[in-house]
Length: 232
Image (cartoon, rainbow, N blue to C red):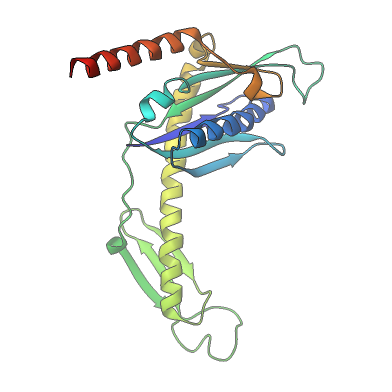
């Protein structure tokens, strides 16, 4: 099972961007403790050091449903702003969502059209005399990459495939984020009153509180699972 998960500050202020970075650390700790393979697909840095506007992760595990149950939704951090000392607000909200219902991009090398051209600029006597540079065009999207790093056409072709793939996948992530951003903005006010997790203080790990209804729901699911096992 694979799932794309986004942690986002939405349109929240700098404090929310700081919370995203802090929550990401806790999230990654729990992922590692549960032996869940992950990959950070995309991250958008915040307006200050040690802050993040959003981060998107790809998780792979058979047990993702249970793990994500206590994470997906609105997350609240209770504390005073470290950026605005006189600010009265004490509750800061971010969101963690699954990017679902969206087409997964399947990058196929057979859909690439290559053009060989002469390298541009200085680089020795032979650079501009032979067609060593490569332009790779991904036909389904029209995106292209121009590579002239090496004097070897074969090496430039290899690099162009790697960079074009990264470009196509990154653009897909950006589109996913935009759609998820719209969802987050539309539901922010509703979800603020019902966070799935609450943190307080600067040490998120020690001050973490899980909403009781999440614990109860997970407990009931485990009981049902055990009951079914007994029947078998």
